[in-house]
Image (tube, rainbow, N blue to C red):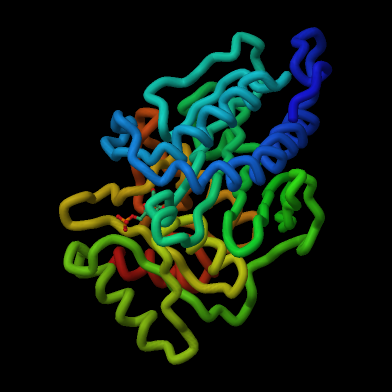
Length: 299
Ligand code: F6P
């Protein structure tokens, strides 16, 4: 939780300190977000900026993180998938983009969801190359957190007090990948992607792992190696996932862990889109899988 010292905007703090404080705040909020989920399984009254109807749980997590991160010294802007506009904290500093509860449709069937954090050293909407750290919390059987910063990825387990302990350091994608997860309705896939999916499925070492929460599905790839895609679709060429809140942070995390990210043509980090809530196709995973995917679109 933010202390008096954290929230008094008197002296400048270094970006490194701010990133640590952001991660601390998100970890501290995680058990409270988790504890707040059971009573918030119903839909909220208004749609979010992407035209989806959030659950009360999405709004609850967003409000909590907005209050705590927005008040943090060193955070100049706060944005979330659930808000139309960027909030300027008036103090200057790093910009934080939050997907408060990624995969919240998994709340009713009690499956994995997560909180995604993207930190940019630029006003929002920022470029992928402005990213200075990214992280996600996973509300699974246990609460874990993966953080990419300073060219390294670490994985932690978060306890009920919001303290966290390292479980993996220098995380890198395994060399012998075994899982794939592809979103979107199969009949809506474009032919190039359908052909690529068939190629992946024909590899006897690969198993389907798809749960419908991007961050849970990406974490499968971070753990076992392979590829996650929410592809371009025939009726939605930009796919479903949002650049600032999902595309850039997972691209940053997977690339920092030695993998590759792509929108089908280039690294997600080099994707340029207008608008805070713009979308992009997302392909992330082991290098050889993303290379083959780009080759399939290039044919
Ligand atoms: O962006 C929200 C999200 O829930 C992602 O976590 C997930 O990958 C995707 O939507 C699933 O979408 P759909 O249910 O349309 O396949």
